[in-house]
Image 1 (cartoon, rainbow, N blue to C red):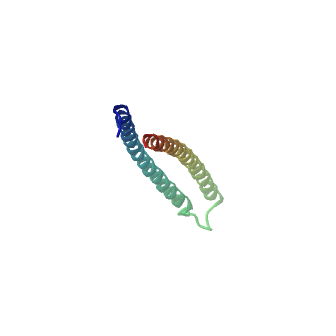
Image 2: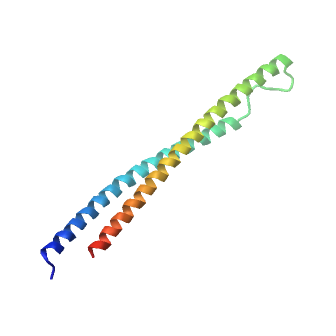
Image 3: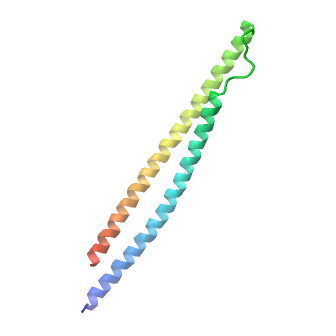
Length: 122
């Protein structure tokens, strides 16, 4: 037979477990949103790489030296632009990875805490 203090203790443990479950649900939602942003970033990166790999239209073998030099400058500017965009995407991916790791670690800690609280109620 349970005493009054044991019953109150069990109810408190269940309440804490329910709060932890709500926190876990909120964090899981946050994690899903983060994954969606990572997928969008990956799609942008794929589009950028595809764009970079397309050959420049209009460059032919019979162009003058001045025309070729103009195209070379254009290509260098495109390359610089691509490099800057690629660097920005890399930075964004690293930031998303840090957020993902942080949220994952927080979720694990909350899970372990809830698990221990449930085990202590038993």
